Length: 364
Image 1 (tube, rainbow, N blue to C red):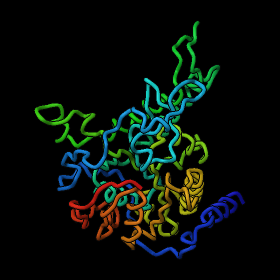
Image 2: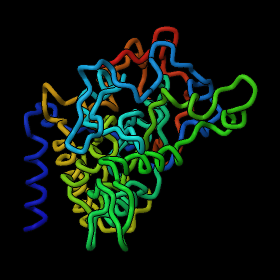
Image 3: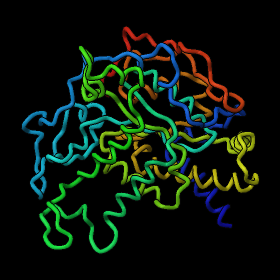
Image 4: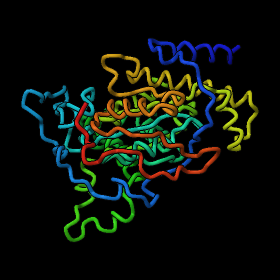
């Protein structure tokens, strides 16, 4: 009964205000999700060339317009930066000498296994100044546990914004300052290509900070929805708090029957019924997570977007609409790649039709 109820809840979720959610699923061969980072492949792409930010102003802690500066009850600035007006106008950031949470842009692909996310990962990495890494053993869950540990027990350390003396002594911890260490974890597992790093800070090449100041960083992960450590609401709050200037693509495969077949071919050591239960619960988590991020809000759904594999895998126009939603213009792709066709074979095509003389981030 619990399984039937969960399945019904998932179906109800996907019918919330979206006609796309009612489309018939197609019988596609799966694209599979597996660790793949485009930068590890020696191909000609924007990732291998430093692209100075000519159209975009560098990140800075300065306030954009005096009218935008506000101070909260603790006296810290709650101000906008250059990208809050385009990439993340929804962001709420409390800047302090310890951390400027909205200083860097992020992009995440959140999904489950055997749903085509490796293909999305590779295609998004063709966009200028976008660098996303692949699977990471659930690193964001570990970051959530670390943050939770500081808030659990006798004291919520992250809520102590004034100086504390005695056995628990520490200076006042600014609001939202723990976002920066968590963001650094993502940067640490999503560095520039090795060939680039060999040249950074040498000769006329930029520093690491200069190279990445306009880079959109992020990861794709299939493990967020499989954990019992948090609810979809809690996961959404974690992203809003620690990655306030992030956009999140939630990718779902509606055709669970073929997702099960693909999972079995990939070696999942579970019965069909157990895989089905796992995927139904995972998809329900993903749909709820996306809803809590505002993906179903027709007017204000700028933080998160739901993508259905059956839609984008057969229609590059759906992918191009997603690219426009991200704020890029003149970056149309001519084809949809097919990573891990059958099982784990990569698509050998290098050119997906983007005209880099015109393609650019223009806000959104």
